[in-house]
Image (tube, rainbow, N blue to C red; front, side, top):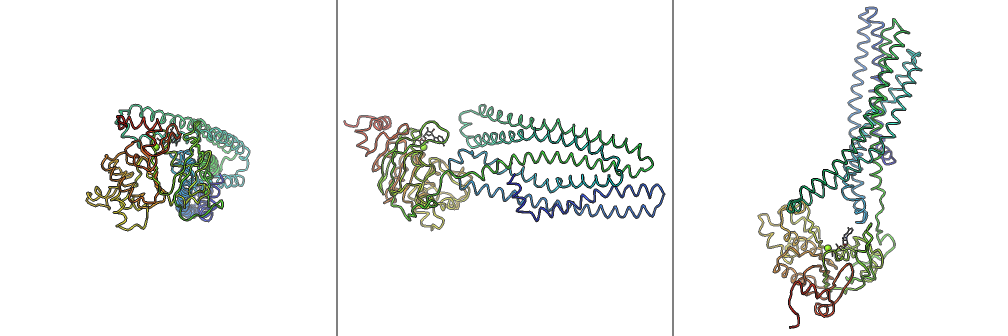
Amino acid sequence: MKLIINAIRKHLGMFLTAIFFLSIETMADLLQPTFMSYIVDNGVKEQDIGKIIQYGAIMLGIAAAGALGAVMRNIFASYTSQRIGKEMRADIYKKVQTLSFENIDRLQASSIITRITSDVTQIQNFINGTMRIMMKAPITCIGAVALIILQTPQQLPMMVLIIGIATLLIGANMKLGYPRFGRQQRKLDKLNEVSREFLSSIRVVKAFGAEQQEEEKFGEAAAEFSSAGVSATRVAAVFSPLINLTVNMGIVVLLWISGTGEAGKIGRTMASVNYMTQVLFSLGMVSNILNAFVRAVASAQRVEEILQEEPVQKDGANQGGPELLCPRGSVEFRNVTFYYAGTGRPSVQALSFSVQPGETIGIIGPTGSGKTTLVSLIPRFYDATEGQVLVDGTDVTQWSMDRLRENIAVVPQKALLFSGTIEENLRWGKPDASGEEIVHASKIACADEFVEGFAEKYETSLGQGGVNLSGGQKQRLSIARALLKNPRILILDDCTSALDASTEASVLAGLREQAEGMTVFLISQRISTVMKADRILCMEDGQVRGLGTHRELLDGCPAYRAIYESQIGGKIYG
Ligand code: ADP
Ligand code: MG
């Protein structure tokens, strides 16, 4: 609610201008029946053409003013609400950028999308509606009641009664509708999530012939959303006719009263019935706008939830941490345990080891053994639940986040490329990289060879997520992007998995040359990939099973030996 008020306050000038034009429009609507009654009572009844023309001209003038007011009000209302929507979206977007992975895991990406799109639209519609009609209803009510008191005061008690009943109905409608709209919005989140998941995994779904299953999942989410919608609409469906009934009954009763009491004054009777309709119609509008209000408040709450979300991680620089310029690249884990939020089991447990600057450390272990989790603690994608991760002897939470991440490059397991040209994608690593640097990095990553094969070479456009490349090509580009950054610490998370053995070997050889002095974490499930690393960390169930050179592990680490035998086979000492 505060969100909506603040948004309006920020654009108060525009808002009030819209209200001003709205008032002109409303006044015009209000005056029409009065002049109509003059025409009927004075002009028509006395057959005075001059008066008819005179009043007619005034009515025309009022109608013109009203139309102008309506047009202007429309322009200002649309402009203001669009502006507010745009700013609100930008605020959410900016906020999301500052959040930690843990926040985003908790909020869920699909829910953030619904908030940026549908929730902001609800708020926008409400604000627009406010400027269009909400203010019109009270002005009409007060104005019409005043004119009735002036012209036909005996109808007032009846009117108050009718307004009272209508107000009660509207109140009940709001009370019942409120929680239902909130529920509908949450179901929309779920539906978005299912759709997103399906669309991003469509290949896998098709490959496994799992369309049926996915269809059921989607059908379920869609059904839940629709039943929540039905339940929300049902409330309106019960109350709208009730309110209408009150309005129409009111007209009948009032016509009857004025018909018997004010016989002879046809024009005045027409006018008062017209006012009656206007008042009750306004009340109907109030109930509509209140529905919109209820939705907008529910949406505003959801938007506020994001805007008020505090990043789980604090930037070390803001806590007076050291402003280290350039780390040497030593990394130490001190008894580190990490739980993902909402899981009861640690994903990595009691990790203690240290890595020297310039060392290449291989990490091997089966899927789910915690390799990705381990390395994501270094650039602070997540923070250790227990224990400490240190870079150059300083706890990573004490580092300035920017400084820390500037010096680390991560090549994720699943290569992430953006839509744009290949060159634009590579420049993510270093915006001011020269053409030579780009080609050099691409050569080391063995990307140059296939890029040169494209007609437009580095200018080739990639679809969203690099859809027009093979998995191995994407991997090589994302390695080149990381190399271009020339980081102190390079994290390669199983990013050569889609390369054939000889390409992988030449990428690794190039890396070894380029990575002189760089600390490298090289994750793989393949022994052949990590074998040549300075030391190898063997992970299983989130724990370190062994740390040493290939030979040392073969001798001393049964887990490593088992992997070796399953992949390379044979006896080692023959
Ligand atoms: P690896 O990289 O070795 O395959 P991960 O580090 O990805 O293993 O996963 C380790 C464990 O943590 C697994 O049990 C996995 O299910 C869990 N896990 C990974 N990411 C998340 C997450 N975002 N939320 C909850 N659990 C997760
Ligand atoms: Mg992994």
